[in-house]
Structure formats: structure tokens, C-alpha cells
Image (tube, rainbow, N blue to C red):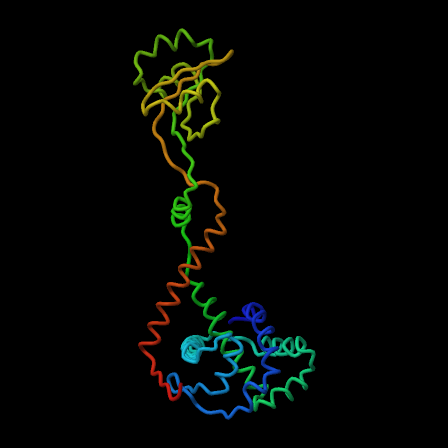
Length: 288
């Protein structure tokens, strides 16, 4: 159940738009309510159209009616699956509308009556819209996930790449220099076995430029795969073999990328569901 999470988002639009609604009697005059369309037998009224014109900020009547049909499609679908907005949340939203207009709830009711609208009309309109928007978002996002692979691919598309070298490294004490020279018969020697024989330290690393000591780091980035590199300092001898190179996604803002992927997937599911519901539904337009 959606418990008012979406109402805060829609409220920003609503408070600004419905301020206008209360002062446009000269524009609309008194409403004579009638059915202008229906979705699966559920009517869309002229009063819905007038409220929606202000709420959505759409003046084109065809686009406005298309929007109301879409809202009704999603609303019916979600209600059948138990999605709801608590009445308390809608009541709280209505109180905020009254407050934003400098009115008490009773004064708001009186103003609505001038347009032959009731508090019930406003609440039903708000509730239906919230379910069809925020309720839909919550419902679809339940089953939309973003995998680690998708995140990595998104990073690659952003062009934020780092080059890493995969290497095997042996560190041997200089005291073992003669023994090491005797055992090192070719550049293809098994470094792990060699390390065990001379008591060295063997490891496989994935390194970026600057990770190794300067003597190795300067050479490893020009070395070819399989090439054996030597370096030393006052205490140790270093042997390194380049195993390969890889491109790794950089440290892009993962949360931002995740939200972008979720938004794209949501839109795809949104369009898919809209097309499916439109095909299955009986939509009648009585008056444009």
C-alpha cells in the first residue's frame, strides 16, 4: 500500500496550480457536469476535465483527454491489485491546499461550490491521480533491479576508464641473489615455483600506474605480455612478469548511474503496460 509517499511530490505542482483554480470563475463560469468519455465503463466527467486542465497545465483538449484516459487506465489496473493511497494522506493534502490559499477548510468548500465542485470531487481527483502516478511508480519499481554488470556497462559508456596491468611479482632477499641467478635459466621460468625454491614472496596483482616501485613502474607500462622485468633496491630483488592488460570502469557516481538505469527501465515498463492496457480496454470518447 502506498502510504502518502507520492503525495509530497505531487503536492508541489498541486499547490501552485490549484491556487489558480479558486480564482478563475470568469474564465470557466459554472460547470455543468456531464460524461465526456469512459474507460471500461467508468466515466470521465466534464468536471474532471476542468480540474485536470489546471492541475496538469495542459490547454490542448485532446492531449488533456488522453492524459485523463491514461490516468484511469492505470488507476483501474492498480486498484485491482490492491494499490491505494490512504484517505488520511489525501485529507492532509486538501488542508495544505486550503492553507496555501489563505483559507480554512470551510472556506475552501464554499469556494469550490461556486464552480459546482465539492470537496469529494477534489479528493477523488487527487486520489486517482496519486495512485496512477506515485502508486504506479512504486508498483513497477518493485520488480526492477540493476545488476552489477549493468552498472559496469554504464560506466564504460560514460567513457570513464582506467588501464590496469595484471602481473605476477616475486620479491627475493638480496642474500639469495646467487641462488636466484643459478635457478633463473630462461625468461619463461615458473615464477611461483622459483619463489618457493629461494624463499621469496610471490603474488599476482592488478596494478595501475604508480602502484609499483619507481624502477618497476617505469618499465611495466611499456612491457609486452609475458615479458620478464627485473629491478632491485638496497634489500630486495624484484622480478615481475606482465600477464595482460585490462580496462576497468572508473569511480563514477554509482548511485546516479543506478537511478538513470532505473528511470530508463521504469519508462520501458510504463510504456509496455500502457500499450497492454490500451489494447485490452474499452475506451469511449463521447465529446471532445
